[in-house]
Image: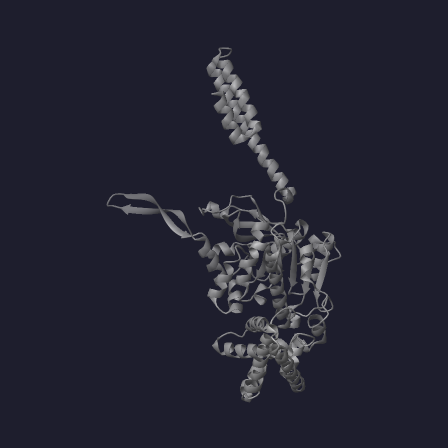
Length: 545
């Protein structure tokens, strides 16, 4: 009996309960040996055992709660983000994967690598409630990232946060570090990204697709003609399309280069053979097709390209993003550098999203390149990624594939967007958007009235069984009788009322979180503490997020 009691207590309660079990066993032994009444001994022992277990559990719970509220780092090592505290709302409704109330919701490195999307209307609290606090916590816990400031009002604050957390920053933008955003991309890749930018500028539908494809073909052939070097940039591409003198000059130079490549190819140079074929096809495209197009068609293609290229008439944009002398090396991410992209989308029109599309793809390519590192190289799985608000303005069709690949290499994205409907408008179809959303495993939505967002979250959560009570009345000649009955009905766990109930005030907000933590679904309405810039910085820096 004594061995059984000790073994059970050690398994269930650990040393403190085991000591209690020893005392109980001693009392039982005294009772059995007639030192005291056996019945009294058993009762005293069981009461004492139950009392001490209850006290120990209460103390342990309060201790864990106290430690958790003081320091989330004590709960999980490495890069992590504390999102908020669960309310238990979905569990109370009978949702099987609903979280218990008053649980701190923390995403570790593994969960963050599944990528996070945060939805919510303007002013709903997504930036102050999740995006900027996540940036602050990731700085503190060792991750590196590129922070994309599409609003143009957060760069200085993020840099100050990094400085306070002892992190090195580099700013990308007008008046900051210089770079050529096309460097390292092939003409085909550039044409593909340019098509994404044109779609996000509102060019969707079958008619727009014709002009977008035509413009992409011109851009791809033009970049092949321009070739690697000082003229392989967006400014030169703009001048090639819109400046007749520059166009003729580069066509003549490419024709001379073709002769040189032909000579190298004749000597067995396989690389020159490939370059020669591509350049010959590009020159033929301009000589046989582009130059002979009817004016309305050529003008339509030029007008389409103008939407993305004309902003690069600005000397400031040319200096910042068309420079051959780059100050930016994204391999610094592996050493913990935080890059801050300051480029207001409203100020620079489509040029802002276009530049960021190239930067985002460059970050993804950098992370994918880690697959070549040795498995014991710490850089292979160092948590590195992109944090971006206004994600609907920089989303691209290739993001789905990129998120799938970078997950196993420590890559992540924390993306803020206004609604799923905004994503559909940018990507052009619901099917494409839903495929991308599957790769954002961690999903959070603040208050929204967007029907697409509400429908999406409601379908994922599914239905719960609700007990309904009905009352019936029966009347006869001489009396009236009443009866009640109960039945189980299935209904959606989330309703429009749930979303309307995601209220906020100056310091707190409610959000619905559909998460996966340690391989288990974890859903609930969470209570988020909002952090404005002035909360995170010295008082002289920043403004509300």
